[in-house]
Image 1 (cartoon, rainbow, N blue to C red):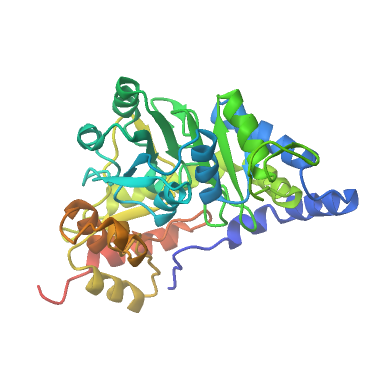
Image 2: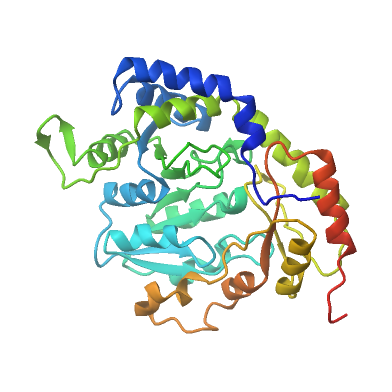
Length: 369
């Protein structure tokens, strides 16, 4: 049996007619930028998150950058960032001219450790950029208390958390603002690049809206030095279709994850840890093993696809050598980078495919044992 790491086939086949009908409707309207479809999606997605405003943009990286720009974070400032995340989180900070300051994760949840944040705060710190990693929310009460104490903004990188909840509240409504990615592989994925900013801050929403469109609040009137990062009508339409199915899509991912959690019995594998206050939507099922290369090779030989998230910690990437953070200075992020491997988990996986993955994981015997 072959089980790919991800497949869009089952999901896209189920909604094929809705997607094609939506495209036909949009094609007939001849309106492709900043139109009613974007406005409808923004309204619907804000409502889904439980927030007041949503502003569509080009991608998830832009969403984070636009929030930082909107809060006037710039050169000379510092932003707290998890040391274990995709590089886009740090890049958003760098694009403003500010400095990303890395804080180590909790080794059990893989997300930023609130107990380590305060020691990294200086007079230059302006925000804490938390990441809801792999589909689980960060420990937000502790983070928000720290932010309030020091007068900092709390920005959610919710690129992997569409529908995830913390104490019953959805990601996107847990801080001052949130950036979402709708990259095709996300739980809510477009058929191309797309993103959104979600917030309850009316001033930020208006500023971000202008920044996405060359800094213009109305045609040929530019109040900021903005960028071109607009969510187009076609992708907004596709996202509206998928949003109507998102809870159903997430529920099956939860079912698969529950089987992995309860049925994988392999002493060489560390399964993800879930906090009681968190309801993950399982964007990724990340496990750890000190024998990753052997494990990945074994699964590949048995037709099972895997992906490593992320094999090089950000501070060790050549792009960030200017920060002069040596190997060993952020050991938890480095350990996760060395040990993490993600198992297949996608909407439409059959019971047989899930059982096959579990069977092969449990049967694995590392070569050196």
